Length: 267
Length: 297
Image (cartoon, rainbow over all chains, first blue to last red; front, side, top):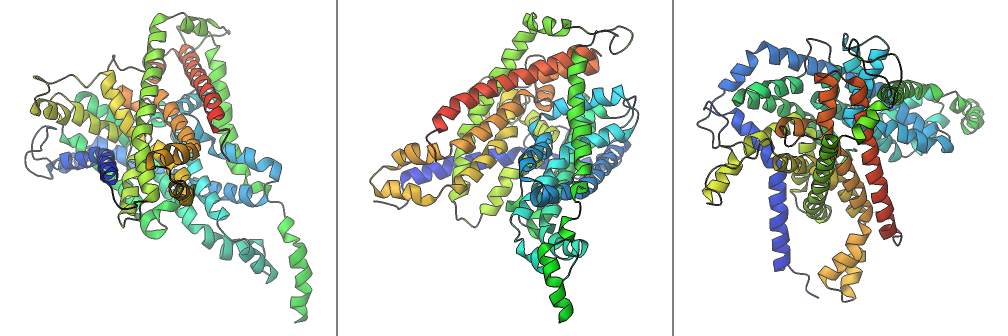
């Protein structure tokens, strides 16, 4: 039995390498284009310059859109960090056996239904209650709902992998519920909470459909602004905006990778 | 000492342990029931409301919107196009995603962390950004046409933007990670010694793959393909940016009804119709694959 490398292995490696390149190259291309010295989004770019980032940072619309995106994402991450963590602790630790599976399904539901349908549902729902599109409450609620499962699933999986006897030990040494939670449970599930919150932030920063249908008049987010810009323009400023959003994502991925490791990530 | 001893029975019976904890799930329940389940009910209600020229909907209720949808050949055309596109995307992502998941599950390379980033980053970079990248690639003087003319395959640039082909290519890229991740989890859970046993009993690599590894990875294939199919059918951003009228899908039509034409009841009916069509196809697919998976442990 020959277990050495065969022609098959090399062919397989070649194909897989091409697919990895296919996965990454469009994103790298956008970054490359944002550094273009030329006027057009033509490949290869003519020279290198940072002037499109200058365009971006002197464009009030893009800046205000970016600010709104960061606000929405930060609130989503913090709110879900609290209620998603509490929910995960309840479902994994305390929920009656009969309820646990149903609850788990409900808590992942925003991931299981198409985002566009959730956006439409919330549009009608808020309209019926007279909130309409006038307040950021609709768009913010939409962002919180859609990003909720990222915190829930990551914390739940951290709880699964955590040895419960440590909690029992703390209790038998006289620690109360709150003390046990703060000193034992919370530190153990912290990686799950961090990962969950950062991914809630990133997803909220990127989502489009919810923002499209629920934004109040006059408010935009970075993805919406880029979408609108591209309807009438096709130049490296758009690439600079896209690069800004890529950088935000990669900083978050890097933080997760350095603090808790990417493979702990749950979708 | 005595105080510690006195606490032991309390710790074991754990009276504090039984303190009410249901409040912990309460905020999440309010969020998901109040702002996900109930709003979905409101789509159903909206789809039966009468249209109105003065407000977004009228007073009474009607089934006219559903009747209009199923009798409109224009809508059926878009429905078939959307389903066909979603099926092509699903098959293509499976074919491209399987080798990557297989490689990532087996590799002991020091680069594996970097390769993992290659797989999940496209997922985390926004859809608008990824679709924009494909606008750059597919435009008339973009990279794709540059390569095609450079290789002498075509004389003049081929129209790729605003076509179904362009949307399909971009969707394959956009949804590829969604098939890799479930497959990866599934393949990592398969004991590699099962394949080794098959090989040591004299089966060729091909035979081992098709008779052992592939059947064992059916749950991952099933999960990944359903995910990609549902996402492709309901995709809005990519067809809206790249599709023009030729590559218009159901989701684009729904948003057009809601935002451009202010036909909320008709748009709601179309959204429900889209969801039911997707559900029906997924159920048939589950029934078909369940038979293939029955023999699995």
